[in-house]
Length: 464
Image (cartoon, rainbow, N blue to C red; front, side, top):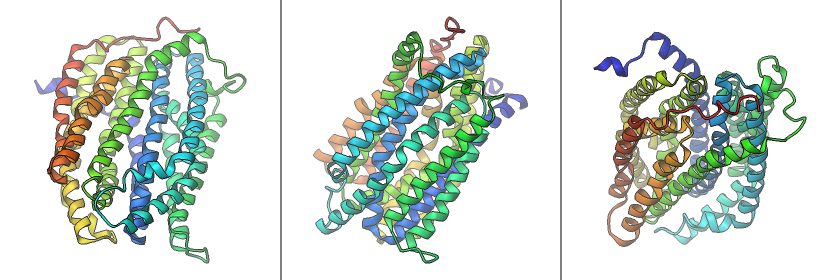
């Protein structure tokens, strides 16, 4: 029976060749974000809280861009699977135009509504003076970060399509280079080293913005230099025209995916706001917990992305009979990897919070939150891998209901009611929001086994 969940050496080699560069890139990015977080945390709790809230808003934006790229990416992976380079080029054009328009709208929103959005997270128990300081630091940080949204968006357009065509190494190199630049500049600008003025949270934002431009220069430069293997980029900017039929298909199948990422991210942000009602200390502790969870969750996150690409390419190539078997093995390996990582994470939860310049109460609360996420990690890994499995066949409406629908209809109402109308403490509340995903896993297992997602959605569009 175990054999149906275990692949051969070639299977794991193909998975790791695709997933490891993604894992390394995301891992180093999150490690640097962790170091950034620690550096800002050394400045004090108001600075850390302000930056944490601003990053919570940017987290929603980042996932919206990811969702837009992924919506077109369903078609990109399948077009590449059936060797239709024009189709891949059209999906690149679509995401480029759509993501830039979305970014312009997001910048306008953040410029005019920054104080109101940040203030939502600073209404819990705590001093008014600390809340005002956190609000000021958050606004300063966000205002500078807006300068990096456009290069970030364009870089994601390039990176996503390169991964869909099986070339995940160049995005990894670009990402690693960018985070190294970010790390060095953070040290110099935050603390004022080598004769540079001490800029604090403004320095952290400037370093991140510069790193965005570095990432874009590397990934776009490599793509255009290697037109022999990146055939989709030849003539990509000669015209931004995309066939109307493909636009319609991407909007029908891809728009639910973008809406899903936007609603899921905003749902998570809202849940964090519900937690913040329990006190301003919760914002700081949750920031520490989420920062390190991002580092330790890179394995199953990367495997999830790889699952979507591998299964999408198989579906595009018409290997429908092979897909069900491989999906089962991919999900099993993803969950197994998360169990191993969670076991490594548990002892770290007692050490990590002590690094921060915060109160003993915040450090203790952060440890407790991290322990809860460690034990919930295999649950998240299973839900994550089933989500990408369903998405690979273009079942975006089903994945929409499965992912953000679950957050908004189940998790969020429970968090809202318990945080505002009961005396439930923050730890039981947080644990409920994590372990309720068990029901999501049961639904995901049923939908994957049902198999209605196994279909080729580009066979009739090849050569259009």
